[in-house]
Length: 581
Image (cartoon, rainbow, N blue to C red; front, side, top):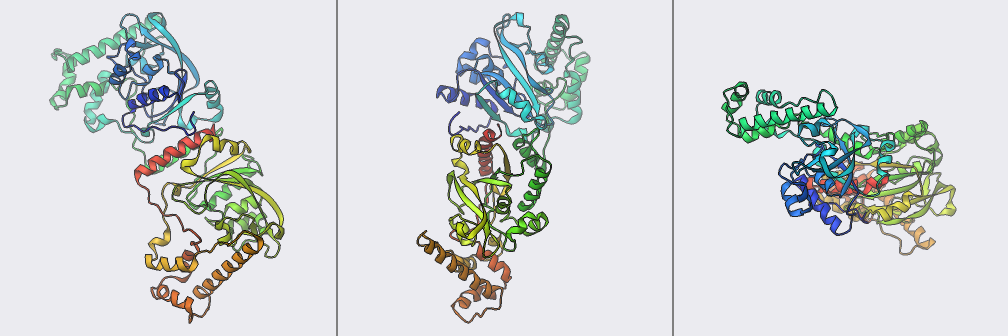
């Protein structure tokens, strides 16, 4: 396992195998006994028809022979994989769930020289991939487990993963949404004819004779169909009568055979998922308790009532939880109108919080003791801090509000800071910050090991976010607000320097609020600067709110492309899989 996890993106799924071979050559993964965790709508566990078993050990011949549906078993026969866990969506029926490993054998068929397996699933029988163990040489065991995604739980997965420390996570994006390509080529009534002709009849019994008869019948069925469609077989028979409407429709004959061959006792999966389904499946991937509870909310502050419900149901502890916060925004301000004592009245608390200020109240209440903010590359409100840094949060003696001792400009500019000697009921909390491409196992694991209890909080604006004020206020007017509201950091971090900074910022915001929202006089320099904005007819509260987003940075704004979102998804997946496991 690298530090960082290596990610390869390919177009055709079989191009994964050369990437695995390169990783083996570079000693990034072991030569043998790796576990493949295969997220896909398809098993990809067939066998190339033209590949001899001995040619598996010549990578040039191997890579030329494999295709998208048949690249995994050759890697098992070569010894590089010893276990496969197929995690499939709900619409994939080619094989049934098998939550415990089942051991099968793979080897060289003595008579044909091809790769064969001893697995008696219809998927392998119907494709003539089966052979009994006594007909194989160089046979080796491999293990297979199968999960529909909503059946994956920690208690089911961990015994499998603990058998091997080395895994390769293989993710096909058709896991989320997939199309049967033949449905767009062949009319439904003609597909139905192919289904009737090609459907596989399972063995009537699993004794050797029953299996042998099944294989012989399937072999003859496919031979006759191939001869009729692709060869020179006579069509003056019942089979020809059934095929004639398809041939009259002008379809390519090889396409007809390939389409028919996808019918065993199921067919190729076909499910065009909606955006909501894809979102739900993404959450399924991130959810892993028995099962991890997932809540979906619209406004980010509505996460806090969900956390409180989980505490009440004893799904998470009352205190000392770690929040892993994926977001373009820190959400670590403090509600202006919330007294520290009111944090302990959930009705007042939930009414006071909003999207930018729900985390610190939960820390002051004791439910969170640590926060790891993982942010995209365009979020600049706070700089990376890869080790935990301890700060204090408490009740400000003079104002009665929540305040923190953290000296980051984010907190100073929003007047959230107070020195420790001005706080009562002060308690420590830890904060670490990562830009997503800087997350590594060696950096994250020491943080996660400090607490066994974490809450993963995911805002979808992590992938793409908009500064709402950019669509309301003209750029030249935003520039005026930037000049007026920009925060001046302290010249020194001694107590007097910080005190002067806070006093100056307080007076700056007071004067601007009075001028924009109150009854302040505009016959001054500040009024002259504000007059173009007021003449443009903007709502005054909106102007103040927009200006308040300027400290020494501004609200993040990045409309990500589809390629960027895909890349970030991979970043998230490789950086959270070890959090879960």
